[in-house]
Image (cartoon, rainbow, N blue to C red):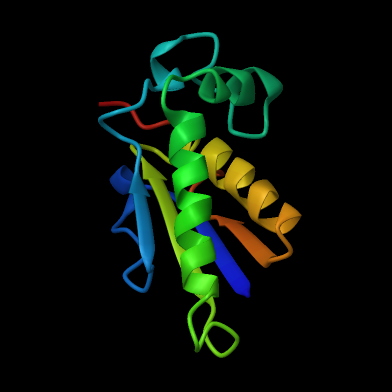
Length: 128
């Protein structure tokens, strides 16, 4: 099954309205933004990846999302329609980007064709 994964920041615009599955990481998972050493980095930096991977609950959420995607893939129209998974956090630079990358990797290992798009990773750090 073809899968599109979009990471995004809620503070940069609305979530993708065509997503079948939406993961909202804003309130339940620690934000690397609050660590000054990580704030200006992105999901492409090893230290941010490590921080998000070590966040309690992230691995379980990814496993559950893979199981959900597998259920969609078992549907009778899976070969006709791509599955869109949107992963959002506040700014889209840390949690969402890392989670989307890890999710894409897990789904590719299961034989899915995955396109990964980071909508807001390039945007400046959001200051509140």
